[in-house]
Image (tube, rainbow, N blue to C red):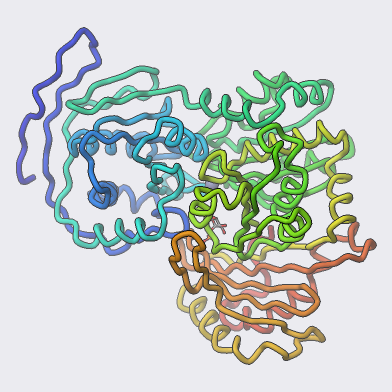
Length: 562
Ligand code: G1P
Ligand code: ZN
């Protein structure tokens, strides 16, 4: 330690939760792997536990902010292993860096969308969210941290790059010595000049939902019907219980796995067909519920199921857009839609019908921020089980579930019938994503390099009877600030409306993950009852051969299909 001093003179009042601090400046050296990915810095928990690792990154966030003096930040996480320790560290660093106030969710818990809302509602200078989203947690799992800006959304690339640059030159950080703060009791504590406000993590968010959806209509509709919400032992447990069981009158037990656990009960908190197995089984049982849904580690993803029916996230975005006006919050219609590039074009068809703009952005929610802030779009979504709107600046799992319930209550139709009606109007974009996880990083890079080299020669050629309409390396120019993001995935589109996309994951923490996105458009009514995977088999084969997946990765089958 370089120096240590007592600062500021402890503030005295009758509040017994006023604590003295001692500020230390600690010498450190940079880590070379602190570049934020698709969604913040995400690493194995053990990496974050290395001495100075978390502190370096937090100080790098602080060093890239225009000022720290008296600013207010929201802090919370998904409750995973190391969440509480990390929050205590952030508190002590905030106190030592002259930050004015931290608003923290009770127990250190905040869902990502709830954190986004709190940043916006309180007009704070941003927030720090501790989460590795849907990645498993625990000592052998993953941990993550990301910075959100005052608009409530994930920091744009310009800022994450500034944080990364700061992390490469860091030589010291400031941290206070102080007793741990009680995160479990709602109230205020003064730590030196820092005010710490521990708040109920759920109420503000639940209030916001009531302004967007018709809770009375949903409550009446749910009476006597059975639904399940699977919180996967992650952050949405308390939110789900408050909203479904207390506010909407569902019986106790409607929320499955409602207690957030540091290791998510040993599960993989990713709401998809592969990881929410028990829910899927129940939904496909003969006497299964009429509606089921699940959310992920930090509450921003959603999976929606009807009785014996799975809604792809791409279709979900399209259906919500087509029917947005059923919900009070969207009664006046929507300004526009955005989808990430690999997401299917189902939403584009709805946008065309509604006469609103549709934007195709790179993967990652941060790319929706400018469009939302500029009022160009109201709804947005990603194929990776992410759907959201301009109510916050993150995707929002429970919001999507409530939107579907509002829709079901308004239409009084089953999920399957709503989807079928939709396809009859717009046609069907059959869709699937094939992931090859933990493949050798160099092999994955070679596959992408080799495929990139082939792209220019593909347009006009025929692959297995299909003519290639275009083939490119996706680049995006933000229509609001003109910033350009290159190398966002390789797209191969065919004249019959089918498409293959190849990308390497930016959130994986072990080796590389190759994602292959498959889409096949059909307006042939007999295809509406067909299994998506059957419809996609021919282009899956083309994808395999074209990219030499087996040759490079040694895998003949994907590890996960969603
Ligand atoms: C994945 C998803 C992406 C999502 C991100 C954060 O990123 O594909 O859509 O925004 O997680 O939830 P990837 O690992 O593909 O970079
Ligand atoms: Zn998430």
